[in-house]
Image (cartoon, rainbow, N blue to C red; front, side, top):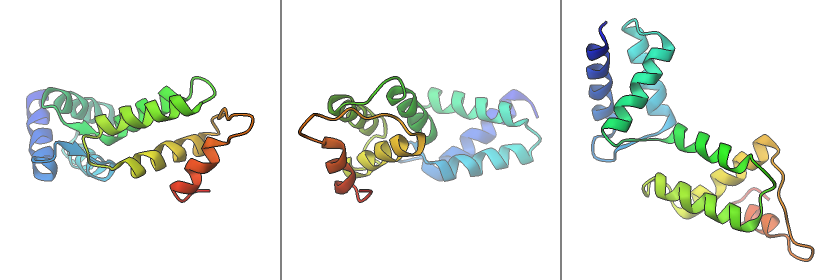
Length: 137
C-alpha cells in the first residue's frame, strides 16, 4: 500500500468516526490503527500516518493530549497552580469534549497511576480536596 493510499484510508476512517467533532478518542484511534494494519501497514507507519493526517486536518488525538499532559506534570512536584494550569491547558486541547471535572479526574488519574509527587501546603491539602471532588479520594 502506497503512502498516499495509506493516508487516504486514514482520512476516510477518521471522517467515519469524528468528522463533525474533529476529536479521536483512544477507542477510535485503536480501531483506525487496526484497520490500517489490516491493509498491511506496519504499526509505526500506521501511527505516524495517523499523527500526520490529524495534524494536517486539525483533529485532536486524545492519546497525544494525555501523553503531553503526562510529560508536563512528570517534571517536578506538582503544586496547585501547576495542577490548575495542566487542567486548563488539557481542557482547551480537548476542545470541550470533556468537561472541567472530567479533565481534573484525568489529571488526578495520571498523577496516581504514575506516582508523581504532589506539593501541598503546610495547613492545606488542596490535592486531597481535588481527589474527593472527582470521586477518587
